[in-house]
Amino acid sequence: MAGKPVRAITKGMPNMDFQPAAKGFLLTETPVSNGDDLWFSDMVGGGIHCLHADGSVDAFLTDETMMGGIALNDDGAIICSGPKALTWFHPGTGKRGKLLDHAEGEKMRGINDIRADGRGGLLFGTVDHVDMLAGKPFFGRSTLYRLSADGTLTAISREHKFSNGLGVSPDGRHIYYNDSGVGTYVFPVAADGSIGEKRLLSDNGDCDGMAMDSEGGIWIAHMSVGGVSRLTPDGKLDRNIPLPDHHVTSMCFGGADMRDAFVTTALPNAGEVVFSGKVPAERPAVILKARSDIAGFPTAKTSFKLS
Image 1 (cartoon, rainbow, N blue to C red):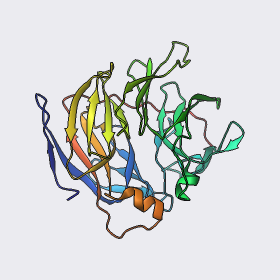
Image 2 (cartoon, one colour):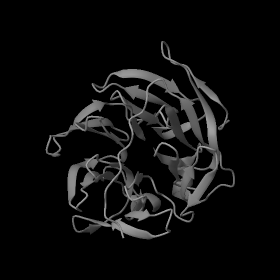
Image 3 (tube, helix red, strand yellow):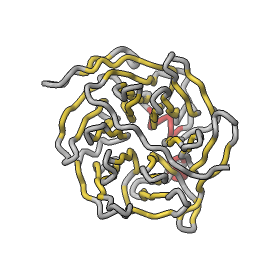
């Protein structure tokens, strides 16, 4: 059953002992660590949550759902994706605001994963939450964008199946992007920040969230089979870590040495719950934590001027 400790054994690789670090959720997503705290969302149960090193959890925006992305701004604000806009809130002051709700002259219909681009701006992928929640076809309408720190919006790649995890290589020269149902793409980034044509790095369509490590490895969450895998920068499968009885949505690294691996999970019938809108009483999703032999690469912060 979900929530039990799991020892993930990979042939020829160090074992990872995953233990529940927090529980009582429905569909946890988009973990981001600042070293001491772990921020994550509960897309179905609602809210943005902060797991502290002592095991306590603070909750914010508990009435809001479908927030599939989190980024940390350099002024302490938390940027969140959602059904209709990129928004932000400051946990210290309680202030809230809207960062972006239109793209190319049209209202946003949904934003999923987001990631700081390492240049003060933000990468994000759109999804059609409006049709999804209405039970209508929604695949094939995702676009990958970059919102620069000065507010410039650029479409990077269009007509993807379903936008998901994003990552930036430690040297800033590559962007990685999970298109669920298709696979993982890589985009080259020039010295001036311009982004080149995509290339399919992996054709494993069971790809949800993503994390980068200090060696340039790309860690992919697999919700359908349950587990995470690591790709080398050239797309080679380096390790596969099964997590029985867990539907894995994403992961990140944190802790003082960036060797704490955090994994977010979802209840077994997460899709049915999203489409039906009926929230079950049982909350089986957990945050799992293990020590990694490879240190993660710290996630950059955005530099938006928020007021």
